[in-house]
Length: 68
Image 1 (cartoon, one colour):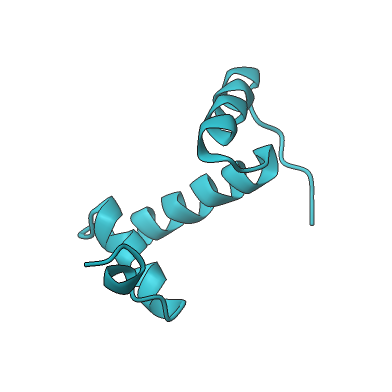
Image 2: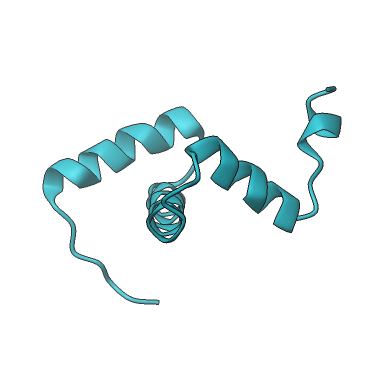
């Protein structure tokens, strides 16, 4: 674990998003970092495709969870 220096405005954006997404500030920042890294390494995938793929890797059948 380490310390990451980020811009004050970005920290405020993370704080606000964390309240909406019901995550801690650290969890929200970690989520954005992970999604950003996955998007950068998979430029042909949409956000939805990235999330769907991560759900599959976690052995979560989204269709069953949301009743589809």
